[in-house]
Image 1 (cartoon, protein in one colour):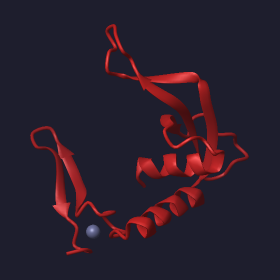
Image 2 (cartoon, helix red, strand yellow):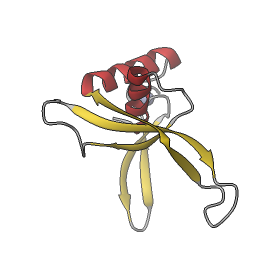
Image 3 (cartoon, rainbow, N blue to C red):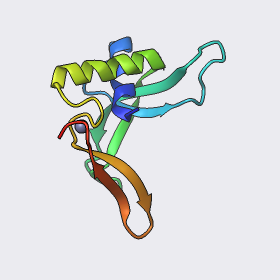
Length: 116
Ligand SMILES: [Zn+2]
């Protein structure tokens, strides 16, 4: 599941503005009574204008929105993306799939055979 869909699902569920970015996506801090859930923290983001972090993303903690999204909600976000973009559901329109990583070659990809 792509990272983007966790973020999309979290925005939809929380009503956070579209320009918010993910500060955290993971299972740490998910209450035990929430099954199949992932924690997403969204915050407003700007860029550091000066200093050693210039050009890097600055997450505004005071705007943080914490959302718990279920696997179903993330899958729904993926389906919505596929429908909206009319793209291949296997490679999501990228025409290639990740095939692995090695120290010498870096990431390698193979062509998607579902959308030739
Ligand atoms: Zn494809």
